Each structure stands twice: as structure tokens, then as C-alpha cells.
Image (cartoon, rainbow, N blue to C red):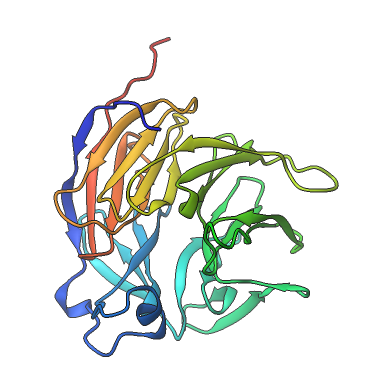
Length: 300
């Protein structure tokens, strides 16, 4: 459970422009996940690039946006798919974890090249999130529609040589994934269990890694996106709760960040230059908020 932490009110940064809001019929993904809603977008998978641009994916309508430091939006990719997250690979390629299409690379012309659809005997259930470590390993969550009644969600890693490894197949909806700053530990959001799991990135030669519960959360749907910063802090977007949490590397609560509006908190990202500044995405309104987290590190 979360011990008392200072409450920080987030401030609006930018909102998806009206001109970029979907006005047609809801997509298949939208009908599946939010039946009855006329969904204009569903933003997820936020991250910063080397030029301080914030990227977010619009899952139901196959779009990837880039947001400038001043809050201007640009459609960078648009294709027939369901991009839950995108990252820029060490070689510069744009790699997408697509819910229905698997792991794909997308070109500047929006051409799609399939990289992986899972293992021969275990096709992906429906990819959710992704993160790179400095050695070029890509870590993937494969949630499908798993939950506490179907604990078969998976976590994979894709090695730089192209080898895909199944690490876990017992997670009730694996979602956000983030490494510690030194790359030695991997955090995974087990959304439907309302937990954050953790395991060592140094994998055993045989068998599965030892996994433990790092945090037990409560309220909302459960943890969605995760982000870590150079201080070792872990930020958690608490889905359907309109808030995010920030913890130390020991699991102590630093801050509870509340949004002024919106409950569909999907993802978080720390600013690359100002590690104490957190960006929080709300999919209900297509909005991005910011909050400066009080620095509680012990002076040395």
C-alpha cells in the first residue's frame, strides 16, 4: 500500500488540437476497450527524444504524434494499425509495439516492416509497451486481454542480435515497463493485480528470472505506464484514477500527482534535462500535464 506522500497538483501543458481529433466511427480497438464511447483519440506510450520532443501514440487510430517543447503537435506517423508505444532504436529506426500487428518498424513514408509476431508456438497476445536499455536490448510487454482470471500475460526481451526471448508468461495484464537508470533491474506494471513487479536484467542462462512485487498499489484500474529518471525515481501512471505516483528506488513514496481533470491516466515521462519534471498523459481529454516533483534526495 502507498504510505502518505505530498500531494502535487499537475498543471496543463498541452492538449491534442481539435483539428487532430478523430470524428468518424470508433475503431475496432476503441469499440473493444471503451464500448459506447465516441473516442477522439487514446494517447499512450509517451517518451522524450534527444531533442526534448515528447512522443505519444494514438492507439485506436494508428497515429504517432510528436509534441514540441512549446506544446505544438505534429503527426509523424499514420498507418493502419494500433500503436501502443513507439521508441527510437539505437540505429535510429522507429519501432512500434502494435497491439494487433506485433513488433514493427515504420518508415518516414509510413511503410511497415514486420519484425516479430511472437514465437512460433506462442504468437503475441497483443503488445502493450516497450523500453530499451543501454546495451540495445528491447523489453516488451504482451498483455492481450489478460487479467486476474487469466494470468498468462507475457514479458519478452529482444536482444540486439534479433533473438526474441520469452521471460514471463504469468502476469495479469503486463503493461508499462521501465529499466532502472543503471539498467540492472526491470520494472513491470501488472495492471490487473495493481502491482509493480521487478526482476534483474541479468537473465539466467536457463529458466525464468526471479520476480518480486516491488509495490502494491490500490485504487483505479491499476498501474499503466512507467518511467524512471537518473535519480532512480520510478513514476507510475495509475489508470482510471487521474493521478500518478513517484517513488524512490527503495519504494518510498515521494509524491502523489493529481490531475486537474481526467481519469484515464495512461503514461508518464520524465524530462531528459530536468529529471524532477514529470509529464503525465490523460487519454480521456487527450491532454498532457506537468508537475515538478520535490527533490527529497539526501544531500551528500
